[in-house]
Length: 89
Image (cartoon, rainbow, N blue to C red; front, side):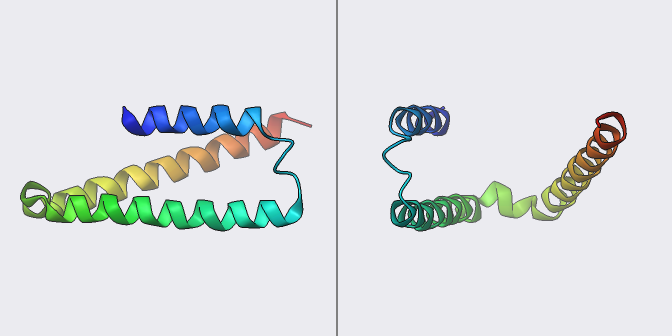
């Protein structure tokens, strides 16, 4: 829930101040900041998962499940795009 509230707060701040960040140097600086934040959050989440003994105990089954879900999501996205390209002008 905290991540969702953070996402909503960031969206609100971004929409309220979108004209102030339009200069190219600000855009580059924000891009670097966003990538660094993304890497830090993903690293923290990976460290938390790696420290959990239940996750390491069930590692192989979790890997297979996540690979199957990723493949299904990718196939569904490709199928939807193929259908939309056929129907849309």
